[in-house]
Length: 387
Image (cartoon, rainbow, N blue to C red; front, side, top):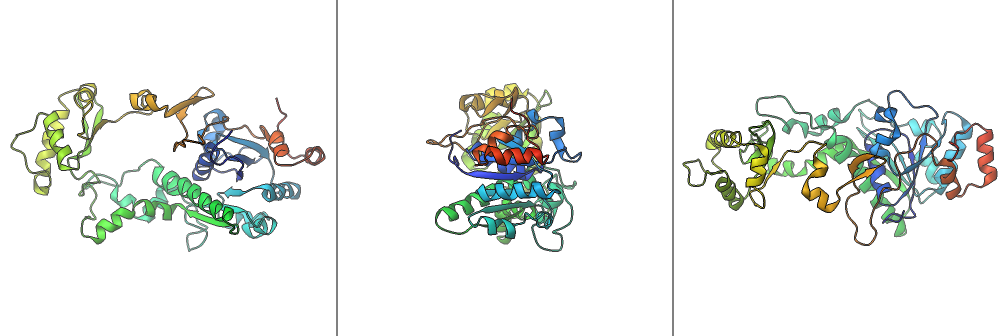
C-alpha cells in the first residue's frame, strides 16, 4: 500500500490499548508493520481473544510469533530491529531490557532507530513500575476532576483521554517527529510517551483558564464542562439527546430562535445566576419533541446543535456517508483512516492478523533469505503457513 509513510518499517511488540492504536495510525498511513506476537494468546490481553477480525486497532499488520524467553527468538527480534525504522513497545519499564531488547542494545545495533515506549506513568518516577489503566492515569493528570456533573462523582469518559488521545496519538506524533529528525541527519532516539502526561497536555487550555481566573475547580460549574446551559446535552421526547454548543452570541441568538424562545423573558446568556432558569427552559422545550424533529428544525443552522448518535447509527449519517468516514473491512464497519492526505492517501491493506499470519512474506520483504527462515522453522519459531 502506498501512503505518506510508505517505505517506513515498524516493528511492534504485542500489547493492548494505546500502543496498538498508535501503530494503527502509522499502518493506515502506509508504514510496513510487523507485529511480534506471543506463540499463545495471553489470557489478559483484551479483545484479540475474540478473534482478529474485530481487532480494529490491530489492522494493517503482519505477524511473526516469537517466544522472547528463548535466545533464538531474541536473536530474530534483534535482526528485525536492525532492519526497522521504528520499534514500538508497551511493557513496564525495564521489561525490554531484561529480554535483551532494550533501547541501549537496539540503538547500538541500529543507530538511526526510533524506539517508541508507551506506558501509563512514564519510564521514570516513583510510579513508573506500578500497574494502572486509563482511568488511573487521567485521575493523576488533573483532567478527570473536571469531567462530570456538578455535585456528582467524576464521569468515566470511556478510555479516550488516556489510552488513545493522551497515549497512542501522542506516541504516534512523537515517533513521526523523531523520524523527521533522523531524515534531517539526526540520530535515533527513545520516545518516552506517558499517558498521564499526554492527558495533562490535552488539558493545557484549562490550566490557562485556571491561571486567568476563568475556571472554577468545581465540576459542572464552567461553560466547557456542562455548567453552562448553552453548552450541554438535552433529552428529547423519545429518549434520545441533542447537544448544544452555542457559545458565540450570534449562534446563541439562532438557538433561541430555532427553539421558539427568541424575545422571551430569559436571563442573559452569561448571567450565571440565571443559568438554572435557562437550563429548565431548554430542557422543557427539547423534551417536547423527538430527536428527529429537532434534527429537522436545526438542519442547515449555525446554532451549533447536533444529535447524539450511537455507534451503530453513526456511519449512516449523511456527513459521514458523503466523506466516506467509515469503511467496511472483512465485514466489520470501522472508522476509516484520518487525517486525509491529498497526494498520498491512506488506506487499510488488511484486517488484524492471526498469530503468525503473513509472517513469512513479511520476513522475506525485510530481507530474510530462505536459509534464515528455514533455520527459524527448525528452531521452532512460529510462522503461520501461507495460504
